Image (cartoon, rainbow, N blue to C red; front, side, top):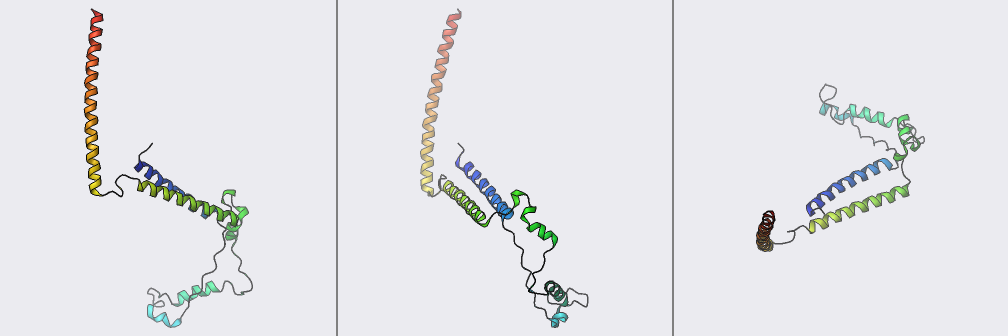
Length: 187
């Protein structure tokens, strides 16, 4: 089993992957609807002298150049009772049957359920990360208690090292005995 820091790093990588997958799902399976045309900007012909424009300098945002753009935008739909016809390319993009099956929009109920599940998965992963952060050694412990824990671990390490030296001595004596027996058999 990996240590807690490695688990925490893995969880962060999984969370990033889940974020990417969630964004990709939402961008591929949303029910696309055309954006409404932008609201016309108020135009005023009295501002043409304050920022330039006709004299060759940088035009002011409220000059006749902006007014012509606004007029162009607003004149595309001259009759409010008739909806404007989208271009052929936007019709192809909004036609679900022209998209590959994995990119077709889901029904609103399916899409909402999938969003809920993706959000739930993200919440679970963040809770797992919070838990791993909470159980890291030293989190929530004061400096004095950490120093005491280090001293206790150092003492335990010294005891284990002494025990190891004793076992190594026994091994050396055992090797000596075995070599003596092998040497006695050869004579």
